[in-house]
Image 1 (spheres, rainbow, N blue to C red):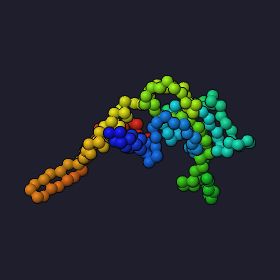
Image 2: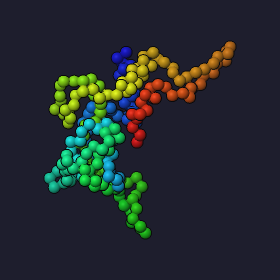
Image 3: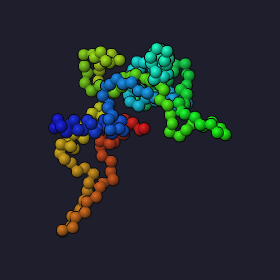
Image 4: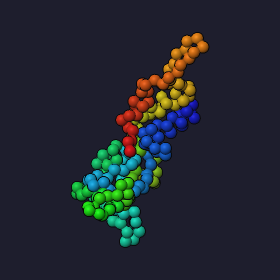
Length: 197
């Protein structure tokens, strides 16, 4: 059962983050992000718990990019991953530009110049200990119950070797198996939390 729980947790994390190496557990990360001609910067890992530092360049050595104070930006929407400036300034499009008759961005040529260090993810169990690496002091449970239930349902499916979603008929020596079109409970529970990229 422990192995089934481990596999189910990995499966749920991959499904929610929409990536092979995704994690939904509380973590600290440094990420480079491209501006998008909007007043919000979208970080890839959610939910955002706290932003520690933000630079307008990946060059953080002396004389490099500007570091913004914690009062210069705010977490706009933790679940969606949006950070914005408090003075409503925007994040310019960080594209490589081509010039001919008019100026236009090169397709799929984006520079990721914004460097953000932040804490994200959920806490499963309430804890009294604090780690020096954490940016926030919160230690209470934040994991949604639907996500935990989805992990348990998926673990049960793995443990029992369920063939959920497969149906078939058998008439004498002839048998026909086909996949069911219905969505299973796990996907329905996780749908509100899935990260679309």
